[in-house]
Image (cartoon, rainbow over all chains, first blue to last red; front, side, top):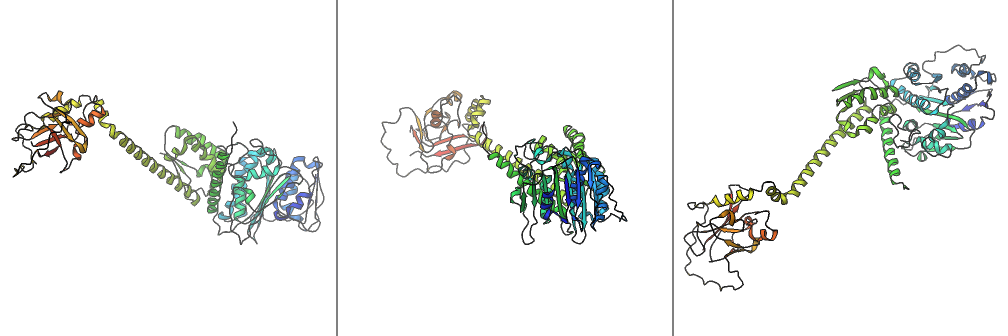
Length: 320
Length: 280
């Protein structure tokens, strides 16, 4: 596998980075980077770390980083998690208040520890920390419950104080959304599976609308909606497909749709196949936004979407 | 009422679905099975994920339906969860209102549906009723009784109008005709009121006859009758619609005097309906 960290890779322009990944030889990972400046979304770091974990440090070749921003990758713990010596010497800054380094979360207890002990290190107001806790909790639990990945969820986050925005990336190398949804639904391709997973009330664990006693099929819909309400990007990459929620322009009202096709989004269905799932999200932490009200709004949309879905299913012809 | 305080179990951010599941399986469901009322106290919990709430209570709604609302109360200080609480309370109130309205409606509908058949049912349940009523009717007026509201004596007409010609189609037996309420029956004579009332209209023998103007004529009949009466016979021989008569209505008696008709108001009630008629 070959992965090249470009000059810039954020959700808005991540397509070309994803297209450049070479998965042809899955027994070896070769990491190269732009030699001048590297500025990437945390989701990119999560992807690199996930790939490295699957093959072990002995099979990783990492070209020495020359870019001025190379220290960032050291601080984010990318080389540490890959088990390689970057040769980069830095004066460790106090991490508090700026980022969450690459972290592996394998189970519920580790997640609870992470939420109670690590996220507070961002030193954000509780109002700002709530959506971060919420997003990480829901996304990490999706990995434990659906991905079947032995490596767990790999995540990291970066806070940008100038725009008051947090960027979160989480990746796994599990069975992917298509295989997860196929446990209960007949889906032909990755994009269909991704869109189905975004519909409220749909979960791979059951064909029942509204889910089971432990899975409501609401997690991804809530995360996507949080991004939409804050007029930010959100992406899911699984298999060959990338679904990317685009920013809602400030001159347009935000409307939450149960059907992801109605959201302003872009689709890419011919990317190199990622074995597992990658989710990236940006959230603008506007202190004027009451997160609880936002959740109420999303809950309302979820409930309406669920009702609509049940109505549609009820009206479907049944052949007996 | 058992209170489950969530803060010590979940921390101020409730997201661990395993904890939610344990609370549901090990505390909530056993308590509900024991018929206990439960308070889920979220005080101190700043936020909860949708997954946590779902894992905590969604299965309860699946198992017990909306009836869970009558035994489970959520208390919190966060606006989002407050909204949930308010919604639950609203649903509980709405449910009770609908149940009350529904029960009232069905009760009213049942009463209205049974009302026309009520005498039939009553007589079926208490077959001796007809006999008791016949006794009541017979003992209502004694010879010495004087009606309290007897209208002023009929003034003797200055000129006696000629009687109409005899209609040959009229029955030979003594009879009573009240077209307005459909009565057309024979007037029976005798002192064995119990047996005679089974046959229809009975003239109280201690009072006048149509030929005898010294006393009023009193005719009595059941208002409902007996179970073995056919509907047609009942229509012709009972005084069911006697209260519908008003001043000015015509009552014909095939005989020849002042006429008083009466029946009971309801069952063996002491109240009687009297209709007074003048001979023409």
